[in-house]
Length: 165
Image (tube, rainbow, N blue to C red; front, side, top):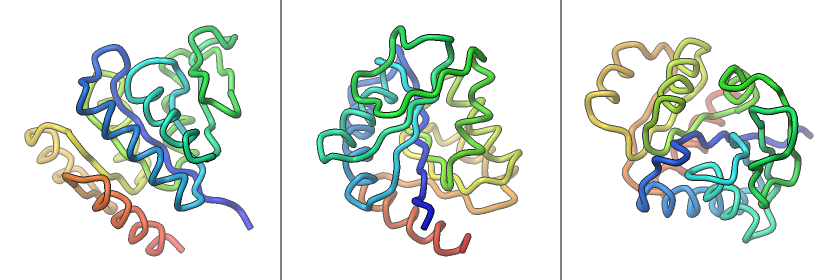
């Protein structure tokens, strides 16, 4: 049986404390569901926090890294995928994820949200500004939900995955 990959996308260096705390809790919750966590793999912001959260409960973490080496990789990544693609790796992040979770907003995260919409991947938004959420609603051709808590995010991911089967 193929295990499900859930991608958590979010800001790196500009991530707020609340976004990092939420990402850590999301990483834990995803691992507890026996899903595999996929992140951008770097040792900063939402990527690192989610990876550390999953690792703290023995979850499996895949990191899709922008460079050609493991420089700046989160220590919590179990399986590093080196792309040498810079931000182009965002396509891999989205296509490889069963469900995409955007936690917070940065320029890279916005590109990942746009790719999820374009590639019609189920999308969960948390700590994303209302104006962005509303634009996403206008563009979404598949399920897209805005949530306020980790618990609701996990419940929605379960619903979205069930709908895809």
